[in-house]
Amino acid sequence: MRGRAYLNAVLSCIVIGGIVAVIGTVDTGSVTSSPAAGAAKTLSPPSVPPTMESTPTPHVISSAIPKTLTVHVTNRDLIKPTPVDQNLLEKDGSGRVKPGDLPGLYVADGTSTLPGTNQGTVVVGGHAKSTDDAVFNPLMSIGKSDIDHSYVILELPEGRLTYTVEAIYVVDKVDLSQQRELADNRPGRILLITCDVENDRDTFQNLIVAGCDASHVGCGAL
Image 1: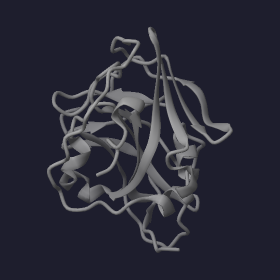
Image 2: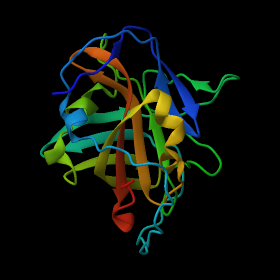
Image 3: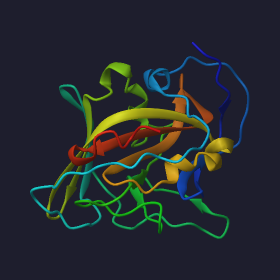
């Protein structure tokens, strides 16, 4: 068990270094960590990422905004097929992004792309709240035993993309801009980014679920 500071506020998102972060007003307190927080890795200082080798994919799927997103754990859908916002997440003048009730994609040159065959990092932002059953709240229950056995599934107009969950990270929002590895546009990678919720309280950290498609195994490790 580890102490966690929490906040009680309406949440919004901010893009720092090309990454969608969730921000809010911080209060203090001590709460019990979720399975996802217990499985989370500690990020090392920024470093040059390794070059990943890729193998050909038999069926080419053109890049597009997905129709639905599903997160499957073991023998059940942790997040049932959920419509994806067909409008991309955008920054305002202060660099903040506020996703709606549906998962939303953030696309930025050199950082993230639309999903598709042989595309780079796909960033999906979604709300998790202590005061509401938001779309990404279920991500808090992914534990260590689920790593490499859970999947993020995107249904595109031309086919399905499946990413194996390889790692979970919990990052202080104030430190997110220093984690340049997260902003690497890596082939075959997906990042689900949301607020961290612990013991029914919103913390000042972000939960990040990293996955990779079958052609780019290992791309989720930082």
